[in-house]
Image (cartoon, rainbow, N blue to C red; front, side, top):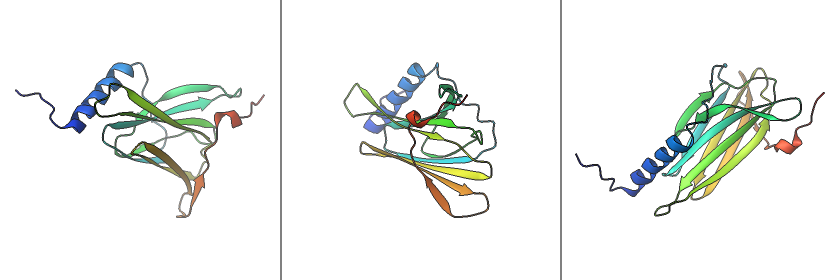
Length: 159
């Protein structure tokens, strides 16, 4: 049996999978049992993987990691808690050809999903540039509203 990986993109993908399995085995998977209200589409360069880490935010604005969703190229539906502020953290990992290092970039934002609304996230990574576009749509209406990126520092502690 010949196990050579002659195509460089397959070699890179195999390395990233190995890194993900070895380095991320302690990261729990998001249970994703809530009604699906976030539709994520991911389009990334070969050799790049993207994940979504979901965190709940407590009254003191501290994060609690709920789990990770792998965003393979294509689409995935995620159930987010409604009327509760959460911290979404999109994690992009890529490996350059002939390099032993992996670069990681993050796009993070606070979001308070509203009851009666659906959300769409378009996630892209091309030639070293990443982008995340999150939009909100009221159920039954086609008009969308773009959701601005909100830093964790904007969270206001509640008593």
